[in-house]
Image (cartoon, rainbow, N blue to C red; front, side, top):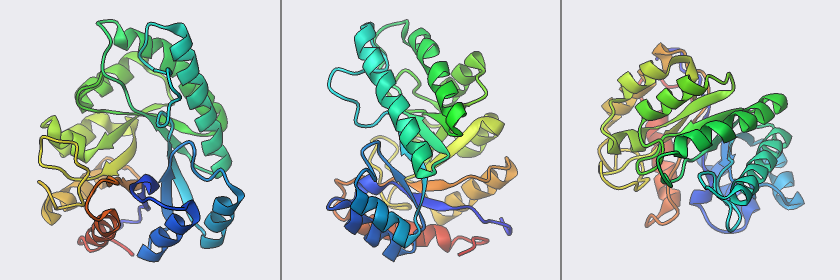
Length: 265
């Protein structure tokens, strides 16, 4: 990891309050990159503050904030159409913000045909992203139609769209008992983005790093593996806003990563 030069981002929705103030706070922690939801950075005040602070937008959570009734995995064509329109708009917003990555989170399976419906929906969204220069990732998520890294990679190989990738979330891998090195090696060039968070191996708690199962040593091995698989994109801290002190969780996690052996400032 001696050549580590990867951007460290942060999901802004961990913090609450006026958006310009949140951006100021994250910048004050030393962060220079952020992830946003589709509603993020829509106001002139927030965009001006982002520009003044020099914050880069790395990624947009395209399937967050779906409108009422919209669903990716639905047998109702109108519900799917509303979800498609929302994600297409989010991808367009991502490109406008200069972000090169976006992701969707699968939903709990409706029935045995869920993956077929995703196969019908996602290639078109991936193509829309490709036309905008935005890669589209799928986040593996326990309890959904793609609950593991292995299942998500299997889906990606089946679809074989050049602009569909895996978002690897280390906390979700802890819940599904998937070893990070094996998972990342299996992903190879389909690895599109990385989320960092911690938990107890049971709940999706999004704790500060090393507040759950992780150690500095295990995080060091994670970054070593990212280098081995030639991943040169951002990694993003994803803490939850219901933690006792989300700002402290972000700041401590940022410090832990920056203090790992071989990390650059």
